[in-house]
Amino acid sequence: MDTSMKRRILLKGSLAASALSVAVGAGLLTPKAVLAAWSETAFTAKQIPDALNALYGSNSLEEVDSINIKAPDIAENGAVVPVTVSTSMGNVESISVIAAENPVPLIASFNLGEGGVPFVSTRIKMGKSGDVIAVVKADGKLFSTRKPVKVTIGGCGG
Amino acid sequence: MAKKSIKIRAKLKNDEITVKALMTHPMESGTRKNSKTGELVPAHYIQEVKCEVAGKNVMTAHWNGGVSKNPYLSFKFKGANKGDMLTLTWVDNKGNSESGQAKIG
Image (cartoon, rainbow over all chains, first blue to last red; front, side, top):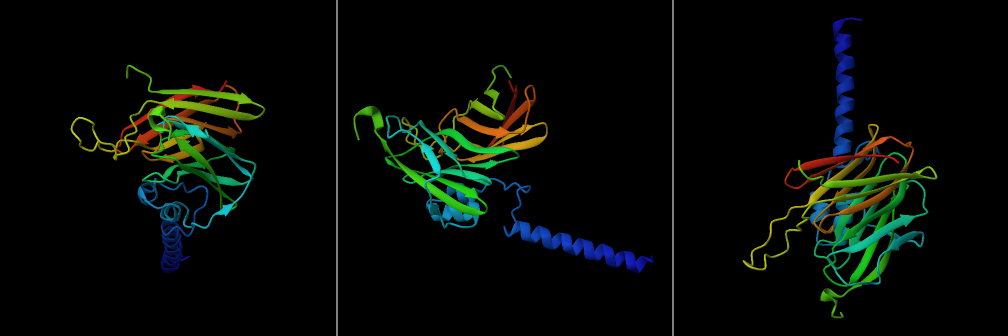
């Protein structure tokens, strides 16, 4: 093989590589191996659809019964509200927790890694009474369910 | 470091490992006001929590200041054995980072 031929192959290879990186950067390709970085847009968005668009590139949610949110009906202290999300769905890639009435609704997003089981539990802050929404990404689609939580600040009734 | 700021428990049961972790962090959302001065307390919260077992990423969590102070995190995964070392690392919005380890029991 002469030099010019080698150069042609090299050029081809680098072109293909750059096209791929552009596609990844634009969010067209999101394979599991490429872990998304923390999204400032998503985690500072004031509206839920904006946050979902930034996080998942889509905001169309399908309401389902197969996601289970465990959270108190009445939370005495809005600063610490335990929330557990689990689902029986398969191929779950990501689980997000949203407090609908918070100034910044998207609170946490959990990306399951290798061997991940769709179960996450954490404690969140809630500004006032409202729905806790769990968004599950499975098979490339977004599913959600919600549960109302009443927050009684100071324990004097809401 | 004098005090352990991350507490981790990892337990294997029926093929599933349940991880429970407690971190020490103020988790300031940046919207709270200082009650004395009336000034906004600057945001200071954990942005990313990563959990690895034997070089494999088993969980990545992205957070903002909406997670409670001294955050608690629990999750489950499959595919590790008793005695494997689990490493949990967090990075906050000021670029601070800390990590802790626990053996799966």
